[in-house]
Image 1 (tube, rainbow, N blue to C red):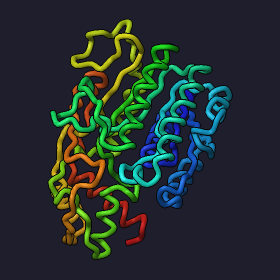
Image 2: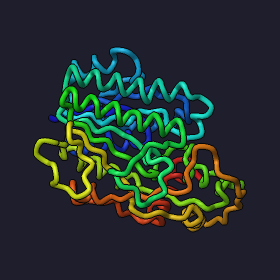
Image 3: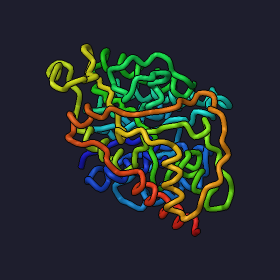
Image 4: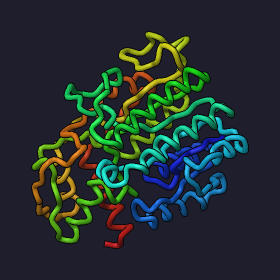
Length: 336
C-alpha cells in the first residue's frame, strides 16, 4: 500500500484529495490544526468521514510546529506529499498578517526541511492563481512573470514557490506547485463567495457584489481539481530528461520543479455565477453593489494547456452544473 501525507486534510480541498487517495488504495496520513478561521464543525464533519476509514490516520497539529512534520516523515516515510495546509483568504490577511507568515511560510519551510531529511518521490504543493497578481495579459500562463502580488496572502504563496524551487535545486526534491483557480463545490469554505451567496440568498438577505459586478473568475469545480491532482501525482518533474518535451513548460532548467495551473480555462462573469445560484435555489438575489476590495483583482483566467500536456486532462465541469451540485449539498447539510 502506497503512503501519502496530506497537510490540511480536514480542509475543503484537503478532504477531497485525501478521499480520492483512499479511494485509489493509498494509505493516507492527514494533518490538520482544525483552526477556527471558519466554522470548525464543518471541518469536523469532513474529518469524521475520513477517520471512519481504516487506511486514514489523523494527526492534529500545526504544520509550522517545529519537528512535527519531520517526525511524521521519519515514522511513515510517505512516497507522495500533498501540501494543502495554509492560512487562506485575501481579506483576512489585512486583519491577521502574522498567521500567513507563520503557516504559509513557516509551515512550508518545516515541510521542506522534513522532506530534505526523508525525501519523498514527489511533493505536490498548493499555490494560488493570486500569485499572478497585477498581470493583465490573459489567460494566465505558468511562464508569465509574476512579481506584483496584490495581497499578503498572494505574496506568501509566491514566496512559497520560490522557497520550494530552491529546495528542489539544492536537494533534488521533485516538486510540482499547482496554482488553483477559484475552487468551489460541496463542502466548500463558508468565507468563499459560493457559500456566502447561497446562504444569504436562501435566507432572503442581500449579497455584496464587489467591483459593481465587473468581476470575472475561472471557477473550478472541486472534483475536477482533485482529478487533476491525482493525475499529477505520477507526473514527476525531471529537468534532466524533460526539457522541451511539453510546449510552454514551466519546468525549471536547474531543478526537478514545475508550476502547473489547475483551472477551468474560462473567465466567467461574476453576475453569471450569481445567476447560476439563483437558478439552482429558485430565489432571486438582492445585490449590494460594492467597490473593489483591497488586494482583490478584477479577473482570473487559466491557460490549462500544460496540465493537458502532462496528464491528458483539463477541468471541464460547467458552472451551472457545479453550482447545482453545491446548492444541493448546501440544502442537505444545513437541512434547508
